[in-house]
Length: 324
Image 1 (tube, rainbow, N blue to C red):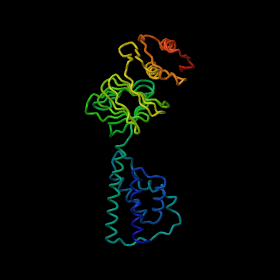
Image 2: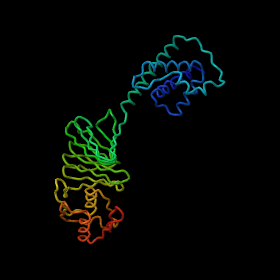
Image 3: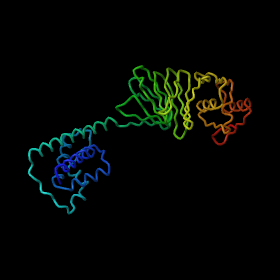
Image 4: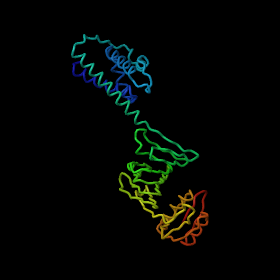
């Protein structure tokens, strides 16, 4: 083997060793490292030295590395009937190369380790009850039941939501805070807002109580949602809709619709009463409705009035209401 090939193999081994010590090596890389160690006693010795060195200087939070234990992962290949190459005397050039390689290896190892530690993902689950989260000094989150929030501990400017949560951003310093829900992205502009994005549903809604958010996807520029407005994203159609909140159920207010399309009415009623309502006849979706309902009226009464007003049929099948 000429010096160039040997140097290339050594460089490749150093890179794989860095990933091995940081826990990032793939199966293919482990096999390559296995073969390289088995090539010579020199390579095996280098592996042992690097393992011992990493063990001495690795952070306390990292699990202990034992040279013998690490090498045992490769023994079934190392101790085959492979001719052992005789080590040559180390000259000055070779010593410099190995020293440089060791330094580069260690720098790479710890860069990967620190990166991996900083990228540690944290998931908060709210199973059967609502969970309040002090996300940061200026961000409070109420995670509704059967919902989850995921984020990285070194990046408190974004979170991934499955389910429903209310975000209270009480400082303008956090204007870069972003929520990822399904395929949508909600970027805060200083506000209080609720995001609903349940799994296996093709609708994401954002209800802004105070302030303003930007609601969009990677492919769609989306909409701005301001106070007392609701934004809805229909995933199958890749379409956003802005709904002025002509209905209110806050502080025991009545529910009022002003010339709202039936599909919008249905979306709002689903949110208020936490039920599933399906418009089976798509030709009915754009029919406008103007109506005023007392805040204590039941969903069944509201749907019956809507059915009589718009001359449609409403039937309940299991827990689902169907309009046709």
